[in-house]
Image (tube, rainbow, N blue to C red; front, top):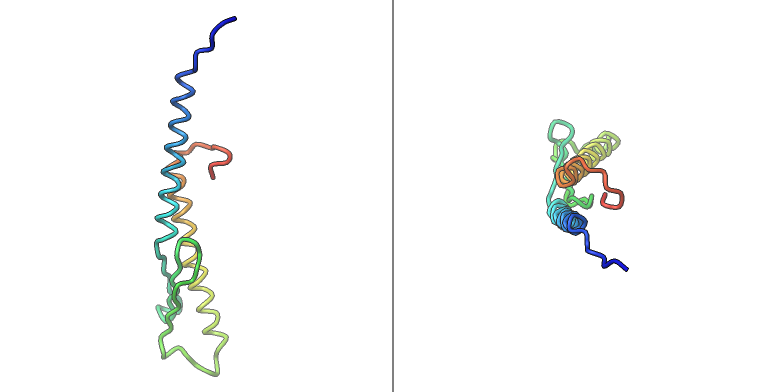
Length: 109
């Protein structure tokens, strides 16, 4: 019976994968804690979200608050919130792609 010698290359690959996973977790934590803002209506409405897509703030300039045109204000809020979320998603995707270096590894995002 032959003795099995561990594959050094396989061990090295596992270390690289583990390091990549640790780096992905670090970047994910940083992005989740980061804030992303967007405006609409020429800056009349600003939305701020974190990397977890939680709305942290909505700032509305007083001059755009028109009780006779609530629909416009609602639309501006939706636009600002959606754009802030898009920025957060884009930052997370970019961060993960940089760590993976173009590798396609199922189960690692």
